[in-house]
Length: 552
Image 1 (cartoon, rainbow, N blue to C red):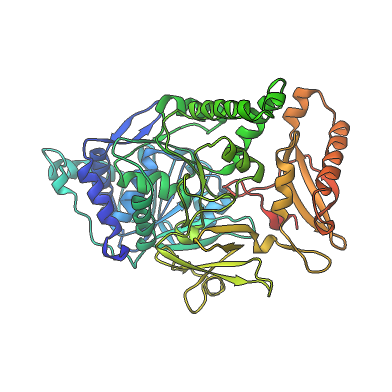
Image 2: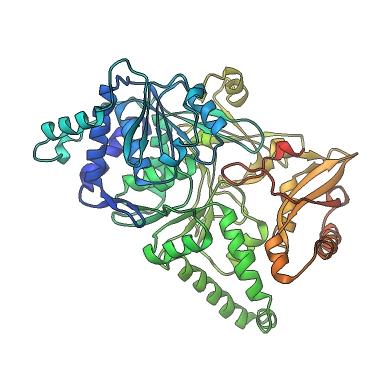
């Protein structure tokens, strides 16, 4: 059972086993070996002791993905304190809220994030440090703390005159039942809540990945997912660290050019991403290529079609570094058209499913095993059931319980009761079904479900997918107005319009043609009544999902 292995055991074992291997790389800066991570943690533990940090105290952490971020996170959870990771895209007022609501006594922040904050809005803090490099920014202690880091360094040198060695790495036992992380996510359907994750939830995700996914000592991952989010934290940080992997951090905004350059340079063995990245690759690179003559004609000929598909697949793989085993997509559904094309060209992708409340994994299957349009197979650390919406039993709410599930929402018993019932089932809020092989198929969010004039279920996401890959469609959201009429709100791709010399009136005519063509494919209750254009992007969550509740 997962509970028999503590989260600290995973961390200790990795440090000792991979002592001389590279753990982290900040592009353009420096590398850190597993031995360097051990020394960093040892110094931080000394610092926490001198600050009077107790087991169970909350420590907030904010900053972009970096070696310093990961080593700080490990330092907190191996000490026995509770880490409160904050997404770097949060507005300062949201950061203030999280620090206060979580009862954090210490704030560890990247320098650029520290400069945005108002310390007077976070009165519960005892101290604050920047982490890149470590520097005291605030102290509310009675005694002078200005030289505390010098004292820590002197004590480290005195304790380990010949340097820290593997046998010195022994962290306190933290029962897997204990709280180790409070993760605040800002969802697409409402306000942020603090998800309380136990050590067992983190351990269960690592345990599953060790048995079902492949990473080897010395392998490389390029980190692009926000580590303060559970998907990136579990699978671009905690699990790779357990496998002796070298995690590479971009240190710059992950634009397509920066990302592809990093893939070419470091040639990752596994790629994790959100679907949006690959949907853009398909829309901006693949579609224009297969839409030109003579490719458009040749692709209709069976024998030649396979040659073209193979060339496209090989080109994509080479552009992404050329040696990855698979691409794992998560955080949102993959567009139907994109997935269909990936399967046609035999591209090694798979789609997983999870939520922060499960730390995050709920389902996954390798690319050779996964089923079309599924979100993978239910993980073996969970059980699942469907609570049907009606007697037709076509779709229902996905409910799970087991090792991965959160302890509840911090200081929010009512929200916890709404999410986890008396039998321990977590109600995910996602609608779908599970087939006979335990593969999960998701239709949409319960809160985004629309009802047609005769009570028909309308999943706006399914309609949006039909528009998303069309030229000049930047973003789209389908809502219901005035007596069951569906309206497609579209933010145009102004950059592409400018390149092609099109006016807004011309694009309006193009969109109207799309509406007629797509409506012809849909039953009447799913047909879009009209299109509304926006001149600004939709407000989004850190995972780049549109905050639907703002536009209903």
